[in-house]
Amino acid sequence: MSDSSFVVNFLAAVLAALVLGYVAHRLHLPTIIGYLLAGVAVGPHTPGFMGDPGLVRSLAEVGVAFLMFAVGTRVHLNRLRRVYKVGVLGGLAQVALTIALGAIIGKSLGAGWPAAFFFGALISVSSTAVAVKLLYDRGHLDSLHGKVALAILLVQDLLVLPLILVLPVLAHPGETSAFDSLIALAKAAGLLLASLIVGARVIPWLLERVARTASQELFIFASISIALGSAIGTQALGVSAAVGAFLAGVAISQGKFSEQVSSAFSPFQDLFGIFFFISVGMLLDPALLRHELAAAAVTILLVIGGKLLLVTLLTRLFGYSRPVSLLVGLSLAQVGELSFILAGLGLNQGLIEVRLYNLVVMSALASIFVSPFLVQFGEAALKRARLRRVPRQAPVTPETGPGSPQ
Image (cartoon, rainbow, N blue to C red):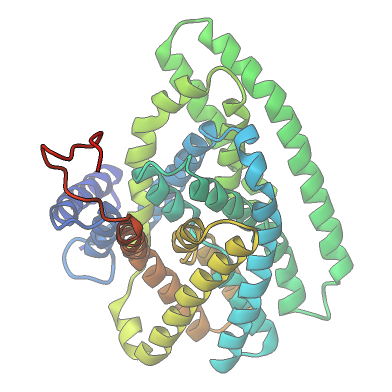
């Protein structure tokens, strides 16, 4: 039974997230797992109430924009300077190597080389929403591995634009020239740069005027307008809406209103961000997994294991410690939400077949589902390793206290 009422869908999703999030918490599991299962429960592939995927997806888009905007307000560019090399060079290398790995996987699944390379591009992008949520929940956004992960994620998201522009060339090699795609890319990059310059000047001016009214409500409305306006603006340029919201937050973080905006935005970020995970859970179709169990299992293992290994090794090559490198790899060892959009475009262009599309979706869903467990397991393993390295101290007795001679 389905219902298109906004209120009914909103309530059903919130109740399912509340119940299953609480169960996950009681079982000492990440609450993200509960939210994903909530999406499965209200999704179209399970019996009972069936939510409207379109409505939930719209709420999810707002949630991702709010989440990335709030994260941006906490990112100070001077703190990211120490990780820009691994972000730019490491991010580019990771995407290139993951595309190569994915092309090999896609070719082994019977796809042609254009479709195989596109499959590699789909799995090269990590989930910004999942990684940021995991870092935020653990208070690691400002940690070293959190900064490195954020820098790589930003580069990945920005690279989605050339991937979209290359699509017609891959799908119809004879109809669209590479030169046309380069011209379109140059125009989009110029518009994006112009928007960043304008945003850096206009946004602080706007907040200054609103703050003078001393109205908290107007300040919240101004923040929401900036977040959604930036997301829609960059989306119109062909760049991820999440990137636009994030860059708007970064522009605010350089001024004096960052803390005020961050605290005002926190409730919206938490509420609407949950809808992203619910919308992902609604995509899960157990029947598809059953028909392609062997291929899906191998693909999922190669995707998660390959990305984990590549990101960890690349971060290590830039001189970071083993624990930091491993935590960055664990944070990014999943396929991102942008892959759903890219896969849909590839399917519509005729670049990939339905079977490969389903394998991409299943790989993304599985990697998002196991990502919290990977991070939790990795952190616990690193903690145990640190404890084993701590030298055992002699027991303290009244005769031999900490300051007593031995």
